[in-house]
Amino acid sequence: MEVDYIIVGQGIAGTMLSYYLLQQGNTVVVRDKYQPNSASYTASGIINPITGRRFVRTWMIESLMPFAENAYKTLEKELNIQIFQQTQVIDFHASTQMHLAFNSRLPEEKEYLSISYQNNQWNSAFNYPFGVGIISPVYLINLQKLLTAWRKKLQAQSLLLDTFFQLNHLQLFPESIQYKQIKAKAIIFCNGIQAAHLPYFNKLPFAPNKGEALLLNIPQLPRQFIYKQGISLVPWQDHLWWAGSSYEWSYNNHLPSETFRTKTEQQLQKWLLLPFEIKAHIAAERPATIERRPFVGLHPYFPQVGILNGLGTKGCSLAPFFANAFSKHLITREPLLPEISIHRFQKILKP
Image (cartoon, rainbow, N blue to C red; front, top):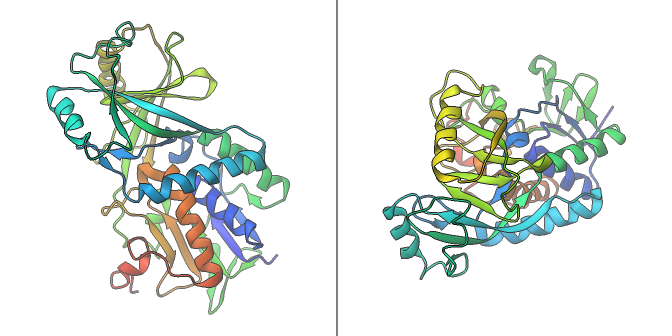
C-alpha cells in the first residue's frame, strides 16, 4: 500500500491534519489506538481569548479564533454533527486581588472583558463575595463528538489503523518511509506526549503536565455558560459538567488522584450552592512545551519525519490553524511561522 502521508495519532492535532491533507487531495493513513483517557478525549474543549491571572490575550487569538470557528462549523456540516457553541465565561473572582486585576484590564480588553450589572443574579447558585466579570465570546467545542465522528469517517474509508505505533517497524529511505506494508512520503507524529519518547524528538523541550477533572451531575445549573472560580465548570456531554482542571508538573502516574478529588470537592462545596453528584474522575497527561508554543514541521535532519504536537491546553484553538499551515507547507513548502517551526531547534536536534 502506498500513500502520501502516515499520521500517527488521532487526537485533535491528528484529526485536523488528516482533514486538511485530505481536503487538498492527498492520500493518508491514520494510525491510532483508541484510548478514551487521552488528553484530547478528556479536555474541556474551551477556546478562551483571555488567559492567566493577569487576564491577558491568548497568543495569536485574533487569528486563531475566527479560523477555528470556521473550521469547526465546516466540520459540523461535513460530519452532520453539532460540536460548536459560542458562550461566555462567568468569572467569579476568587479574591480581592483577582477582582482588581480583572477591573484593571477592562479599559484595554473591551473586546473580550466586561462587568456584569446584575451581580445578584447568581446568588442562588454560587457564593462569590469578590464580584463577577464576563469573558466573551468564548467557544466550546465538543471534542469527544468530533473525534468520534471523524474516526468513523476514516474507518468507513479504510484510512484508520486501530493499532499502537511500533518504532522498530519504521524504515527511513532518502525520499520516503516504510511502515510495515505501507510506503509514504513522510510520517507525521501527532501522538501527544508519546512523541517525546521518540529518538527524533526526544530532545525537544516538552514540558508535560498532568490534568485532572471531575464529571458532575448538577441538574439545576443553567448550561448556556461556563462558570469559573479557580476551577471551571464546563457543560459536558451526557448532560454532565466538567470540573477542573489541575496542572501538575510533578507526578508519579497518569491516574486520577484522591488529592485532586478531595481538594476539588471541598472547593465546590464552598463555591457552588446547588446540589451536585460526582459521576466520574478523569486524568490525562498533556503534551505542553517549555516555550508554550507548538512543535510543527519536518525534522531538519530526517525530512521524512514530521511533527504536529505540543499544543498543551490550547489544542482546540491551535490545532485547526496550524494543521492547515502545516498541510500547506507539506504541499507547497509555504514557510511556517518561526515561532512554531521545529527548525528553531535545529542545533539540539542534530543527531
